[in-house]
Amino acid sequence: MIRIENLRKTYRAADGREVEALADIELEIGAGEVFGIIGRSGAGKSTLIRTLNLLERPSAGRVLIDGEDITTLDSEGLYALRRRVGMIFQHFNLLGAKTVADNIDWPLKATGHTNAAERAERVKELLALVGLSEQGHKYPSQLSGGQKQRVGIARALANRPQILLCDEATSALDPETTQSILRLLLDINRQLGLTIVLITHEMQVIRTICDRVAVIDGGRIVESGRVADVFLHPRHPVTRSMVAQSDALAAASFDPAHAYMKDKLRGTLVRLTYIGDVTYQPILSRIMAGAKVQITILQGEVSSIKDVPFGQLLLELEGSEDDIREVFAELDRHQIHHEVLQ
Amino acid sequence: MDLSVIDWSDIWIATWETLVMTGVSLLFTILLGLPLGILLFVTARRQLLEQGFVYTVLSFVVNVLRSVPFLILLIVMIPVTVILIGTSLGVEGAIPPLVVGTAPFFARLVENVLREVDRGVIEACQAMGIRTHRIIFGALLPEALPGLIAAVTVTAITLMSYAAMSGVIGGGGLGDLAIRFGYQRFQTEVMVITVALLVVLVQIIQYSGDRLVLYFTRK
Image (cartoon, rainbow over the protein chains, first blue to last red):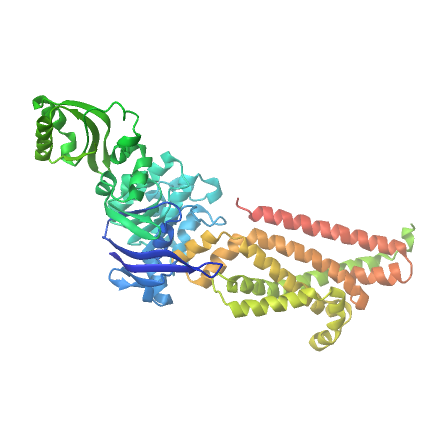
């Protein structure tokens, strides 16, 4: 669906120096996928998502959508492309002088849909889709942040795009509203088969709705893959530090040298990670039942990333080397990934 | 002060003339200044239709016209006005210099008002695949409407005081009355009344403008 090849973007700064905003970007995003790009501010994620509808023109490289290189489109082609690619924004960017219904109607009216009755029907449909059927007559300033973003979503969907770009769409919202907007996006993704590309600095957003994630830092993609794989086995330092700041995944980036109990550790420190159905099986109790090893749980989480259940536990094992090896063999049999930290 | 020396019919005619001069000049000022202001805005750096050369030229012309003191412009414009409408006197004669004097001013105000429109809103329209001219007329101008009305109000008041000034070169209206009777014939009463009328007119314009701005503000 979307392929980014060898993308590069450089700016000329005020002092004449060339600043590299993006370099060597390679990405492939499948149809119907929810793809997240996460990075700290200034990492280049906003520039990257804006190249997908050419709000930002890349300096080099290709951006293919359905096999077509959009960087070579003429202005007519670009108009047509942008109607197929919806976008929502951190600050909503609604037209303050138009009502909610007129905001949603505007992209239809302005792109040549002349049948007012059909448009009104479509607006009604979209208002219902985002749960704002009663708010059509209001002005954006009368709405809450979450409602404004719902209008933004309805407006972006008006021309029935195949792709929805979300530029920090929940960053201006409180956690509860964020969750409700993410649920809406996920519903839309499933109902309409819409491909969603989002950028965010919040791990929680990626965990909740993304299938795959790319971590961007310094204008380069440093790591990418399935969300569970990237977040449970972070390899790049930037990913590790992001994971470390997320309370929920603290076990993934546990550093024994800085731990509270570092002086009290006697045994072997092991991190177990398991993904999928195994999460809900009584594996630990089976292992403990047979083993002559003392097991202490130091830290851990059992939860899910999008729909994928996972568990991650930090254990201290005390016993003879042979007994511990026995435990590891048992873990391997159950396809539980283990990693000795100390 | 002896108000009995005042010929009230002269006052009312002059008031009417002032209103006509201001109104007609305002109309032409908007007709010329609004497109000019839009053009200034869209051709500026990093805007919808960035055109460095066009912007530089327009901006220069606007600055030149704005640097000429209005009294000088009134005089310089006399031959041009004669060519345009046959006379440089009276109500009609005052209108061309008024328009030339205020249109560039209004254009700058328009440019500034449009710059205040949230960039993100314009960008969102671009992201929807909407053509530039539709963005300008369907989104940019409606979003800027309260600001534009405020700019028209300021311009109308400027025009009214300029219209009074045109009395110096034989334009009509309250300014003309004030100069001929109040100044040249030492009828202080006339001077006082004309100034008082101008004050009232300015208040009315400002008040109406403010009300309209409020009416169209959706924030």
